[in-house]
Image (cartoon, rainbow, N blue to C red; front, side, top):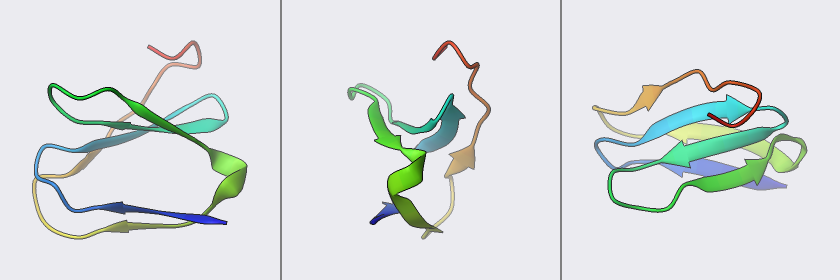
Length: 57
């Protein structure tokens, strides 16, 4: 099982279908299968949960 730890200001966490999507400015999105995530920790301010469409947009 994996943990998602968000600590960088300007990070966004969303769910796209059966995957969590981590987005940061000027970086490639990271996709993590939801079934493999045990825990999500948000450490800091300026980090937002966002909604993602099922088609990945």
